[in-house]
Length: 364
Ligand code: COA
Image (cartoon, rainbow, N blue to C red; front, side, top):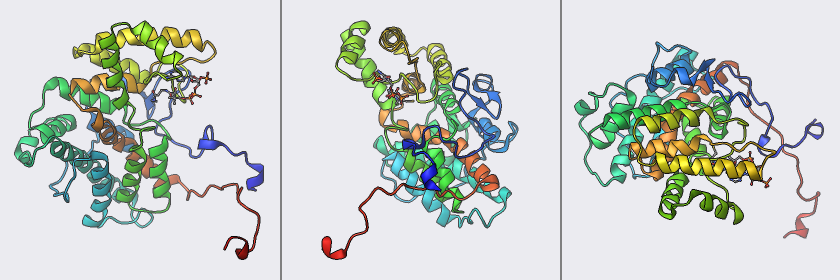
């Protein structure tokens, strides 16, 4: 049977699941969570309610409050701390296997884990900043939203501009269809693994620079262009030397990435110190990319203004993948639950292209 199916490197264009959660709208440049345009969510509902929309299809539902938990020794490397601790929670909380627990139990497990995962990233970031103490739980509890609590747990304070920046970034990146980390989460769930195992698989997949790390490259790029002072020349020089401009182009979108629009508005509204240079570079890049690639729309993608918005909250580029993981717990949780309810064990085929049958003595 495998002979008759085309091999698609990277599975591009292969439909592997049916979903009711979200799938990017290629041509219209809109992103909808369970049918709701994210433009209607940002600024109206905090991230934790958007979590409820994605996981429970209910904006009145929300990601629960985190429960008291003592992580093992964190290292300050947030993605690896997050992956290890999420897997460890399965054991600490004795989570049941997905194929043996009810849908309600799985939803509870995902809620507990999601809330805790944000706390793990905040604590790991605090260690990376050189702190050895923890922010008292009573201080963290004063936060009104998940974003505010996150910043309090990390730094002991939460500037309202930083809260808005983090909340907007989290909502914009909470879900994006069957990307690599979501696929990893669904694969693990399809085997009946527990929710901690499925979420930690997703964190591992997200930690790679091709998926969760791109904003880290945008900030240094903006600094370089600002120092040089001539975005048009910078763009031409960069493209002439065969390099790509980070934050432009997308595998799916052929129109402007809708998340980019929202993040740009937020960066303007919050008075980002980088917005002026970012807009000048964007204008120069779009014009030159269109001139060089008239056949293919290469528009601003989510990573570009994510970097500018995260900078408002003084999130260091190295923390970008873990910030992304905090937001994507919503999409991952929704997909794990959907996989449990409707999915089937993943077992694709590989086309064997190795040696013909041969004798052991020919290689010994
Ligand atoms: N800067 C300059 N040229 C770009 C470009 C960019 N950001 N993105 C694509 N191109 C060009 C490629 O050089 C290629 O040109 P060629 O046909 O003359 O070789 C053409 O557009 C198609 O590129 P391809 O890599 O096939 O497109 P893709 O849809 O598979 O890639 C990305 C999507 C996101 C990987 C790609 O646009 C990219 O590398 N962007 C920069 C990195 C980035 O912003 N990553 C975050 C993604 S959310």
